[in-house]
Image (cartoon, rainbow, N blue to C red):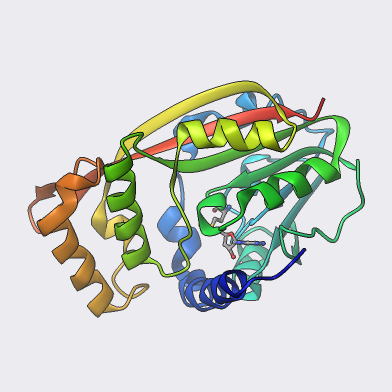
Length: 252
Ligand SMILES: C[S@@+](CC[C@H](N)C(=O)[O-])C[C@H]1O[C@@H](n2cnc3c(N)ncnc32)[C@H](O)[C@@H]1O
């Protein structure tokens, strides 16, 4: 693994952003996967081991209730500390998704949720996930998607970056299929999801600096229509459409 300047800048931003966000992150994002039927989509059985790359405060991994081994890996200690507090049954360990501190061919299900848009080279993460999953195991990836229209994807990413400097790229759904192909993964199932969310939920006051919230609101007022996210005013708040993709793959 070669660490570029972009990688190390991204590392530093991740640590700053998620250390600040950690105390409120679990509560702010609670329930965001509730209507996606993640567990049935993954074909998971409680006897199967699960590891999550970029597990954060553990909300996603905790969906696999009663699992024999649930291990969350994350690069930011503050997020892991919250995971241990909120979900004492999970194992939470520090590590980088680009070189997981885990043996090859070992886990039944390797998952990654809302994390790939924080990395500049997602192929490295998928290849590591593929390495640690056992030969007949499965990989599950969820991430937000950008519109297919190039100009809208650019504008959405500008907004994402304004909100969170650790953002790398929201990618169109087609990019995930290309990445899985490049990683030598076979897509077994795919689901798209969309739902309405509020700006006040995306950016909690107290978690995000006031100045940043102000700049994001300005961007939405001026260019929200260009992002393909359907921004519309709702009283003093804004509402928008969040779109996600969920992919299940095998490594044969
Ligand atoms: C938006 S949070 C998602 C947390 C969790 N998956 C969830 O959905 O609740 C993204 C997490 O990915 C972690 N992360 C980003 N890049 C990483 C990397 N290369 N290795 C390990 N963790 C990483 C961040 O520290 C952060 O906790």
